[in-house]
Image (cartoon, rainbow, N blue to C red; front, side, top):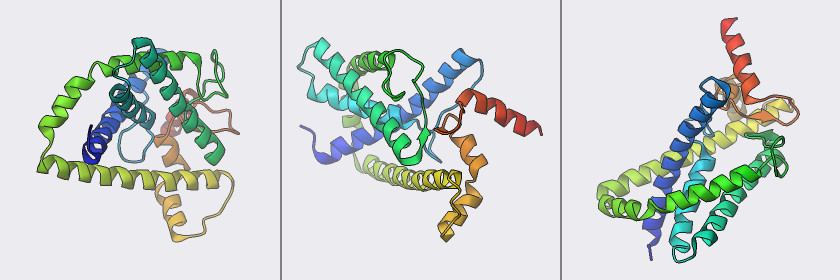
Amino acid sequence: MLDVWSLFSRCLWLFLLGGGLGVIVETVWWRLRYGFWQAHFALLWLPLCTVYGFGAVGCYLGAVIFYEQSTMFRFVAYALAGTLVEFVGGFLLDAGLKMRAWDYRDTFLNIRGYVNGLMTVLWGFLGLGFACLVPGLNDLFALLDGPVYQLVTVAAAAVLLADVLATSACLVRWSKRHQGMAPKTKLDRFIDCRWDDKAMARRFVNWHFTDEPDTARSRHTALNLQEQT
């Protein structure tokens, strides 16, 4: 059984790795589907797509917990876990900020546009594929363990925490600006100056408010037109 530090450090690096790979996957997929490159980020500074980071952590924990279970059991567990992460993330964005970062409403077996049947199946296969990597990952983490690794891990955790806090503050302020709420504090005014609507739209290019008929594809066109004028 892993101790608390080992579990925390492994989950942290898997989150960062999964989130980074998620950006690459999303970017390539957008190129193949729509014919142009578009990177999808979920944080202000770090190039991460966090839903994939949570997916990587969930797959790792599932591989550790369910390693003795049948392949079918693990497939279902991974599929449900990934679907739950997407649903909770989509629900919180919608309910808290009135925003969407993805939208499956026009797809088969979707639930409120947060999840759909295809992604559920994909999460299951991704989980099974990731489980094959777990023994090698455990060996790699065992080799890396040491004072330098611990120091770098703590620094990475601090940077990630700062990014999450800054991103949360900017997203909340973006939502309030959209609702017509004037800044009330110095922090609000700083955010409005540094991360105004245009800057936020460029960073979170696939995000849109639920009262707008906006999509990542149409925003790409709009931003290109803005650059030309």
